Length: 172
Image 1 (tube, helix red, strand yellow):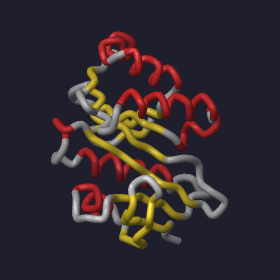
Image 2 (cartoon, one colour):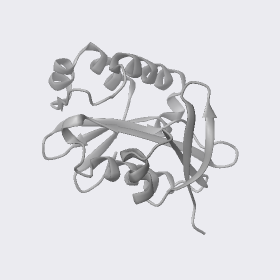
Image 3 (cartoon, helix red, strand yellow):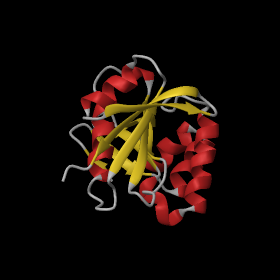
């Protein structure tokens, strides 16, 4: 678990995804936490099923996969994010994150993204952290700049089209 002033980031295990797929009420009964609506922006069942599959296929890489963002005071799941896999041979990883609409514009995404960044750099193998956004001024690239990342490239993603790449390198 990663802890910040207002959040706990729970490293997702198989059981978390299985229970969330069964429903928010099941998650509350099992773990004693509310689940904020739309805590995952995309089709949440699809995202959860994909994440469950990754944890099942790569249990040794679980630290480098998904985290639930828990609002400590509200005891509520307010978002999800994490890493898109373990560091590659050059020590590069990618982060991603999302916050439920009811909890946006309160600094939670920045807090979670900063926590992921700091946590990743505790591993000496991690040299560079990337993130991608749509190619426009938006909340996500504002957050990335706030945590010290800078725009490093414009890429063409096969699914999204043009995207902006942000990065930060380990400080020696």
